Image: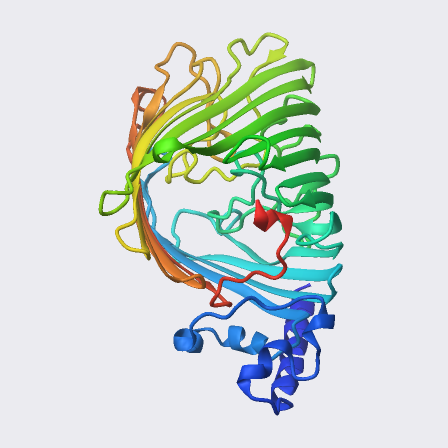
Length: 481
């Protein structure tokens, strides 16, 4: 597989090199290709930015010399981190995370697309954290699919293959991009769309991290769904109802089913967010789950609600917000009713703190904070949050959904409090950097059940998109949501 990837990149480089050498037209005409009529190519490149930083984006310039139906792209992210108090013990570590993605899109017709992307994720200079997923996964097939129909025009498009899935605010289904490896799916999908409306129908299987090149999905671990997004039902709001059906075997790779039996679960939910008068905004989502887990019947639910206000007349236009989260837990583990909410496949980062220590299971969570924009390029955020177990008879779950600390019935339910501070600077859509600090102050539950050390998470990062405009080819419904 790795040899195939290298050969493919060499072949593409060779073709590109020959293409550039053959160019005889001025650069100002290169955007549509020297011999290809853009009206028949079926796709066009986005409007170009100011050329002052073109030297930072050679692939961007290269794409302007290619026919509009082919696009080379990718992105690179580097992130040094130095967590202390790992596992709420005295263990510290420092390391550097590296992630590279390279993609190729070919769109010979408006209604036909071929897309492929590889990913290389690695960790360096680590001492205690292992060279394993989600920190490292070398040269894997990240996305690969043909798409029939256009996600931008017409009424329908369909695809089958490997693809990133993201819906709504990604609290149930997302790629978990903050992780160095992230998450992708083997999927068959049909999207029905019209301006202001989108309905996705899909069958999928998450791609686990393993030792194989292609990372085949776990047999029997499947998720089916219908996800709608409507912008005209409620004024100035997104209204997103959905139904998910998940089946999975009892397997050591699945913390939701380990030692409990086969999972057959239906999640019915609604995500609703929008704007209100006087620069107020709101965001809410509620989910109910039913079905069976081994011999137990499922009766679980989760929800969150947030409200915010932007003070536009203040110099830095601060946006103040307040949010509450709840995810049910099992109060009586000996009963035949399972009440622990299944968080499915979320992007939890920043939904439940920047330190990524808590999952959306058996949880009560409150947070308040403020976001500022002192300039058009700088964004700042500070937030304070508190975490409690919904019931002390159930476990404390990590961000991954696995058990972090086993249940201690009768113990305090207060997990801890967290403070986060983040700063981000955007040079342009293709280049940005930032830094931040998160600290979890161990509450009485952690002080009782672990060594009780506070956890600190300082980090910095930079992100580089091969395209200065941040352009990703293709534009799919996933990037529109």
